Amino acid sequence: MSELFPRIYPHVDVLLEAELKSTEEDFQVTEMLPFTPSGTGSHYWFFIEKRGLNTQEVAKRLAQLASIPVRDVGYAGMKDRHAITRQSFSVPVQAGTTPDWLSLESENLHFLEMTRHDRKLRRGVLKGNHFRLVLRHCQGEPALWETRLQHLQKTGFPNYFGAQRFGHRNLQEVSRLLSGTARKMDRHQRGLLLSAARSALFNQVLAERVRQNNWNVLLAGEIVQLNGSHSIFLAQANEQESLQQRSAEWDVHPSGPLPGRGGLSPENQAALVEKQALDALPEESETLGNIRHWPQQLAAQDVDAARRALRARPDSLQYHWQDASTLILEFSLPAGVFATSCIEALLGHEQVRADRLDLCVD
Image (tube, rainbow, N blue to C red; front, side):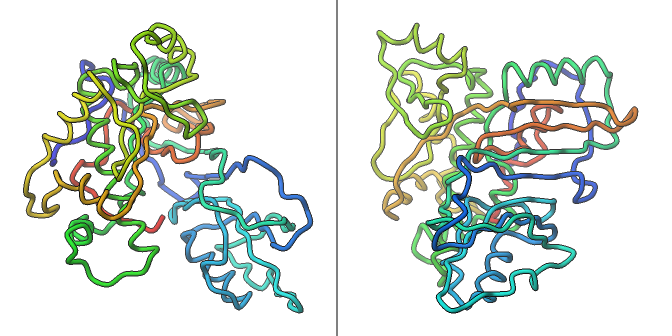
């Protein structure tokens, strides 16, 4: 597991190079909710811009000011600390109290909107994210940049979980959790570790599909995921032709496993590829323990199995050159898709090692 994840240009020797996140301003993310708050109700809703703070830190500040447990603060998803991010939070209205929310304003936190709604903002209630990225010190022929950008729009990219999912703590802690020897941890920390384990296994399956150059096509026995939805179904042999057409139109996608208990399993060729990828994991690893047994151990942890699309593509992609070596990109991605994975596909090489499977808060 020390190799780099495979790229989608395996036969191209010329790689593009660029530097991302030179400053926080170079990486800007804006949440897109699937609805607009009503303006009335039992919860305050805030749209907050932050920098140098992770989502949990903002939630703690809101909870402390409102004198409520941090678990009562709602947000749709985690956002990177090392960026300018704009996201929504909710706080239940406490009878007889009117917190001075603006007292939390600082150079790292700004309230962009304040309103009310009738319910808490739940995890996962997110349409997607809009990104504005600045790539600096770009190297490579301008024609190749243009070709890659056009290809990205048309073909998409492998939907790897990015480094933010794993962060700076080694997955040794995951191995200890799954084997029952972990230190005591709270529910939030445990959830992050289990999520990191599932993400690591998904990335391994996707990497094998990239190696076989079938990450963006439907195989026989594929578990198919509807675009923009968590809905999945098993591809039947008599539907293969129509499903391939729907796949070409980006209405459905091939999917990979987020292991756990139950759930649909692929068949035929799709099942074989997943088995090959997971069987190739080491029986015992000095740093990761018995990672090959993680799927079974995740099921024993009462984690429900799920699926994730193997591919994604940027929506409404716009780009321009600020100067000869600085490229400005703007695009939107579905919830859960990593902009860093999009950029790595554009450059033609993966910058995150397969063995850098650490945990992060954001």
